[in-house]
Amino acid sequence: MNPQAKLIFVTSLLLGTTITISSNHWVMAWTGLEINTLAILPLISKSHHPRAIEAATKYFLVQATASTLVLFSSMTNAWYTGQWDITQLTHPTSSLILTAAISMKLGLVPFHFWFPEVLQGSPIITGLLLSTAMKFPPITLLYMTSLSLNPTLLTTLAILSVALGGWMGLNQTQTRKIMAFSSISHLGWMAIILVYYPKLTLLNFYLYAMMTAAVFLTLNSMKVLNLSMLMNAWTKAPSLSTILLLTLLSLAGLPPMTGFLPKWLIIQELTKQDMAPAAIIISLLSLLGLFFYLRLAYCATITLPPHTTNHMKQWHTNKPINPSIAVLTTLSIMLLPISPMLATII
Image 1 (spheres, helix red, strand yellow):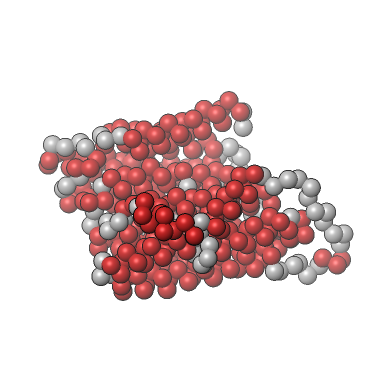
Image 2: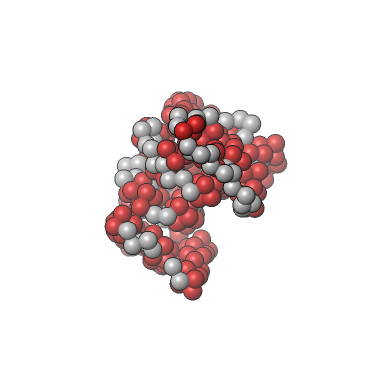
């Protein structure tokens, strides 16, 4: 892709995100979401492969539907209350429509069907943007309207997301699809605590984005698209494979990694809110996700292909590791000790 065109699209992404997260008026928030959608479409379809064109079309249709629902929800609220302010979403029907619209934008169950397909048809770096940056504006809208949302509905969507994200990721062989179901599962953790402690949702999102960025950048450096390519990666890049192992374990939420921190705080807050059954269910369902993270880690570091002795060994790459991978991996592994400080901040 032409560098000038890429610069325009990335700048538009930043502009759309900034407009949405800094606006008080529903129409401005909607405008930012639309700019975001239009800016990411060329990045999804830049390879001109039929799969990429299909992914871009699906993404456009889903996001356009969700944006229409956001506008419809805000207009209904303005009709009944005379308020266009985002934080004044008080009408119950508007709240329900908005929850459905944002769930569709994020890929929460039952509006998740588009997300694995779109991620599979996109390049890895665009997949990283779809999994992290594109989810930030909708999450900020949920954060601003959290007082008006229905807790029962959000808890139901969250538990279903963690269950389906874990369950459907079990039999996948494509790394991008596995990361898509991982994203759906993590969104469930964010949604369940949103009404009770919105700042925890944002903390969870920031840590999730950091760990996911580390995984996607590592997969991009290793040029790995599926599990069979991952099994051959150890002979080419042992250091990157080790980094991938640690980051995946952090993403799974195993202590003493960073990924354990948001899960621990969310379970603690749920028990304080007399929601121990929900906390138990969501903790048990996250074991499904742990299984496919362990499978990825196993393929990356423990499994060697059976035919290594029959062909020439791959040379270890002499390319230096991308500094951003090193920084993100360090943060993904070692942030747990600062949890008391984070707990005082939030």
